[in-house]
Image (cartoon, rainbow, N blue to C red; front, side):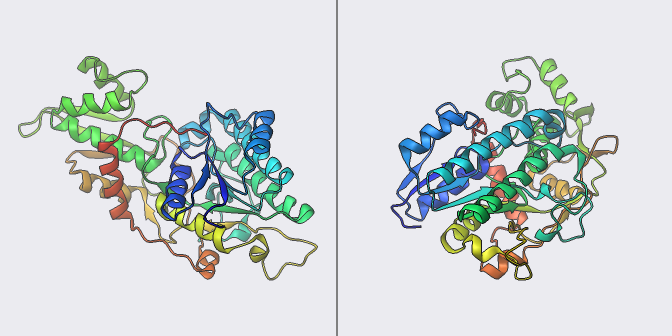
Length: 376
């Protein structure tokens, strides 16, 4: 990509898209195209067609998606499959119709079977059943991969697909109903710490920045306590040193194993691939021209941690003295999910930010930021 190329970043206000947009700006790309959801509804095929007609981008980063944690995925199953299928189908098809030079489609490692061998290689796609709680989202993302492959094989386009592991970073979603595990842990333990110190100024400020179920910091303490309890932040009793003895609930046993990648590292990998790698470079060597599949690229660290250990790290960094309660009656998702990133390493890229440092950075960002909705 040349520095003056017209580059469309779809989903530039979300966690993924904002990191890619910032990375491109930092590298000197000067003609970046963006649209908010209000300006361009990517579910509307006619609006997407008109956008490509008028703007004529040369490159596309397709980071727009409906995303959320285990609760959101399992609750809003119809929205997760419909909206993601529509968004990616409209953008990929119009990219083909308007002769885009290269497109990068972002999926997720939840596309892989629930019981995949570990670490997960790209070749494990479609070899077994998916994790039920995020099956609609995963199916939509698999369709995106296959759409990119199919257009490449039939029409000679240059569309590549990347599958990042669990991401976290500035612009993350901290909504307690829809967030992923790490931002949820940070917010819950942040509020738990404030509660155990009887720090209602901090609690009210948090509710003001990110209201929970319409409750903000102007409400009474009893209303806020009720909401906190609903989301597993519970004042158990008084003691001498702190006003409350506090317990923070975490879904599942804590034995689940996950991998986490700082969003800026993910963005660096995506831009690196767009600058240096083509679809033809991603065809496995053992495949013939008559049967090409599994051309997606995993993006991750190749390092893993249990949710219990992760919660302890957050607890230490935030200096929370209360208890962590692992609720085994709640769903916890796939037992283990670690990506094999040997393909990406062979292409010449490796992550930089370690998890401890990333959690520190994200907590600093959280305390200094206002609410920021993810916009497709």
